[in-house]
Length: 317
Image 1: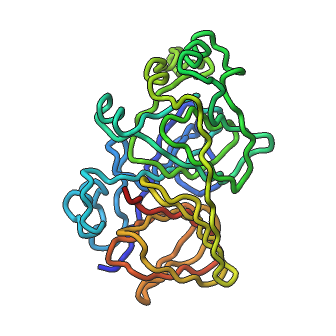
Image 2: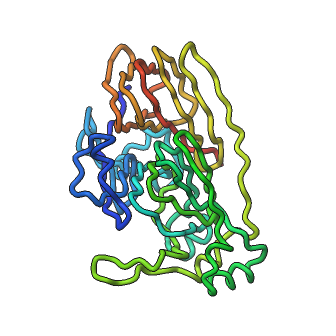
């Protein structure tokens, strides 16, 4: 086939969402409370649809089941990754995600390890990233007593920062931040604290205190990143992560840059600028917000123009 799979975005309304997916990325969003663009997803809560080529109109979950050759004949029962762009017009809830074992046992789906590339951040923006409890008993006590200032670790962020958020990490994206999130294909979130917010009907959102205490890593561990950069002319290829779940890169392209296949398939989302993807003398336009999968039969490609792309591959377990 040797053709990329371009995917239609799936928008998710959130209590903390806004309108910047329209103003920054040019998406035709349905209202001004859109928190997430599920850019590449086979999760049942929002499945991507192919927009081009012989598989136009196919849903990604069906492609995974019926055309495994596109993905290098994987053994996983479900497409393992989920790529999102998030617009936090307000603070997200303080939350934590389970690992695979807990997620499968209690929720019937994968756990959720994720990572964040900060696309933009207002001055003074912060995330919650980790906690100060030394034991699980202390964690439970601090949550019970609502000692949030003592418990939660706040970290200032700026455009271009990158964070790895393994399962078991207490975290929250703060107001005024846009991120590209690469994660396992899971929608299991345990809320620890939600600022006593009410939904449109005046109801407090559900919390998951016992599950949160069960799955949180205690004491907190801050992952050490081994970030690597390779220059190609004026372009740079940054490797942020190489894990069992996913490998994540930033392709900062200025001019023409050549790539060779390193994994069964590659995911890519343009977060800034514009250019073209060139495969076997075929040219495909790339603009801000474009997302695509490069299937297994694409072994070489070029990207040209001035643009930034966050790319990922499945990890090797």
